[in-house]
Image 1 (cartoon, rainbow, N blue to C red):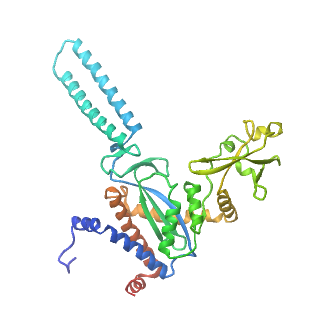
Image 2: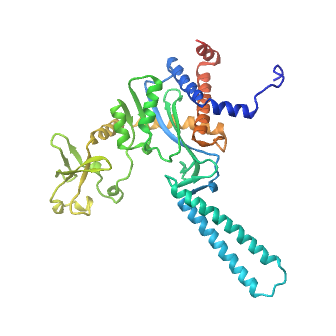
Length: 383
């Protein structure tokens, strides 16, 4: 500072640089990952994928969904009714001073202004594709965090290498779930790492048959545990996983060792499903443990074998879920600590994406400095 005479860029210069060079910042982040690959800092082509919610510059009170808006309107209507009741009582009594009545009228006028503003928001809400509006940061969305609390923010996706916990790929989205992110993040990671084969592990939030199939078709080996959504299991009956598929004969064998044959096929949400059942389930001695319906029907997706292969891989390598947890939680914890309680400082999806790229670049730089040492990193960058 003394040598430069306290010459430094002000906040506006930094903000403009970040805004004007968003593409370049993300490119530098990707290029540094390529350097890490060249330095041999990655594992044997294995990454963990996860998402975490980061707060946006948008208070919860300035985010509206249909339910929030309805609740707020009801609160205002209730308050107006209460104040009107107070006015009626004041009109019936002998007025001693003009203060109380005038104060109530002023409060009612303010509430009516608020109601008018909410009615304007209601019109905008109906036009919004996802029926949600944020007033400060229009791209921010209300979503559930891992602790079960709602925040207004963004969902940050990362693919983290399992060897040194370096962030290989990242993406910022404003969708609160991870269902559609598996194949996209996996393919980004493979492209940046410049490898042919890649294995990825993710939690149940990423379990979606179409995404797993996309990974399979791209030559990416996925490890994602199945979601626990079986109604039969919840009610104490046999789950679908207790019905064994015989691929050679295209039949299912039930827990009572009876055969369920193919009956018909249909298309549901673009997926072809085959239906299997046995006609004499009513005579079965353990029917009560199986189904309350006339017969138990098993529906099989035409690419179900891909999902079954993945579950078999998981059964043979249960340790990958422990590796996943140890890998992805460290970077997110570090980033959130650096960014502070408010997380993002910029607005709109493009701005927060650039901000996250800067944070990811800083995180990877510090990790590599700790691994190789500062001098070795400088030499590698200069080479």
